[in-house]
Image 1: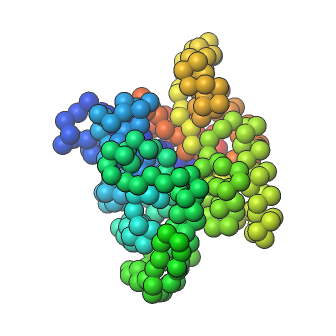
Image 2 (image 1 turned 45 degrees about the horizontal axis):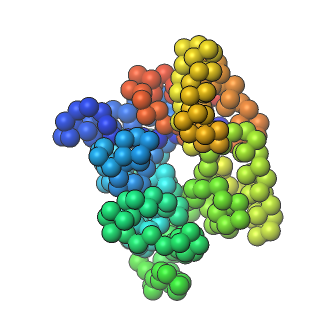
Length: 314
């Protein structure tokens, strides 16, 4: 079954700070009513450069998600994705379990190796090597899984440890909170997905999607796990256009500005073109599509959600 998520990547709404969260709630409730399956926020403490950089507003992810849990009723909630460097994994497991309780079973744990060195340096977080961050990710996902599913787990790793860790109340979701690992690294990240995750998330066009999923299948076979247990998801920025000519101009602009490979993280087109692009990605094996629309208001979110649910019957 094809499902769709909505990511809120920025909080620049041109309203006073006291009204920021009201706009976030409006977007989340609109997405919920329009048929989106999930709402996501970024786990960043500085805004990213393409969206204005550190001088633009950025709300802390899990405070925001907790408040959204109390402001919505059916839509799933998660961070896309949580940087492993920002929180002790046992504390993170407790935070996400609390989100699951507040939302009555709607939390998803998105977890990744973190990458934004600027905010690490600015806010005093250590930023280890790529290899160490991936080592930390592997330990963190095991601790979180254990705390979601076991009464008092013990884990002794190189970077993290828990001893008889209690996590009460337990997650609402039977079997524990689903875990998504973000990133498309073929040697290490996708192998971690095969070993530990319920979902993966990366970006790319149909050809890249097919290649990444073939790699994931190979890792699953090597670790003795069924590929069918994992839901592949894709993050992209959607830009709706009024004509095919406008679509072509926008794609050219994005390729010139971001490079051809980065431009595969966008879906640009008329409604008909967008649907065709999604169908191509479904044929490549993608199941779960998460879109952000940084320049769009609630009316566009509603229009996109209704378009997707009507065509794909989510």
